[in-house]
Image 1: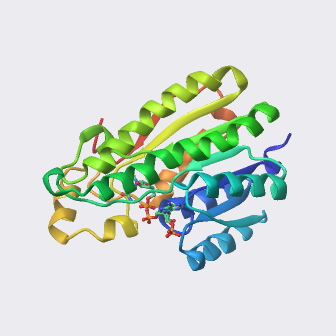
Image 2: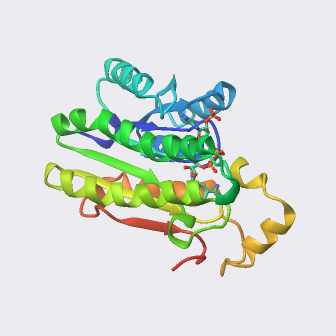
Image 3: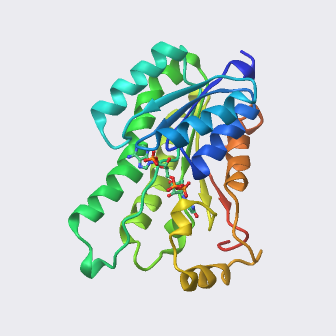
Length: 247
Ligand code: NDP
């Protein structure tokens, strides 16, 4: 099979890192399924950018944390596209609070979206990938899953959980030509981080040896590499993309 026939699914691709990943995979010749939860307009813009690369884009609205929604949507994707070769689990949210004040709902919402969502979407693609005897699952974790971050226990627990999930699933699938890896972005300029106050932002930049905030495309290049044939012998790994913030 040529790389141009591959189908990639990118969750949370209506903006930010997900959009950059979707466009980078289109650039590699993949048709791309653009998932979003609420941002249809953003997803349509992502689809436009994908189609400019001469490949197809498919929009799928579903909530990665809802088992029925995920199962019905992946069934639909398989029927429409015929195959799924690459899954990028990118969708994520934050509900920051210090533990002493954190509501159970804030904890559960973040863990359900950022960690359970990764399990549900991965489970949905394993059988087709086994049948195809080729697959790439790439999970977006975070630098704070390694360093910790006060006010983000829910988010960091989910992101650290993704790393354990990635390594275990990599072991389950390695002999079947399916690799499972993670990419851990540092501080990247997206809607998620523009919400930060100027003080928090300057304190964060001061921790980055490169001296500047990364772009979604910096993360997308690493994902594109892990999705390629050339990365076939890399599995169960985390690639850190953080300007040296954590080493
Ligand atoms: P954004 O907030 O800009 O975008 C998040 C995306 O996730 C949106 O497309 C949103 O869709 C989607 N999404 C959220 N919840 C769901 C859901 N339940 N089901 C489906 N889609 C959902 O985030 P970023 O681009 O900044 O982050 C992308 C990933 O990278 C996340 O996993 C994040 O944790 C991680 N990351 C980001 C860093 C950064 O500095 N920006 C640093 C480290 C990690 P919609 O708008 O349509 O609801």
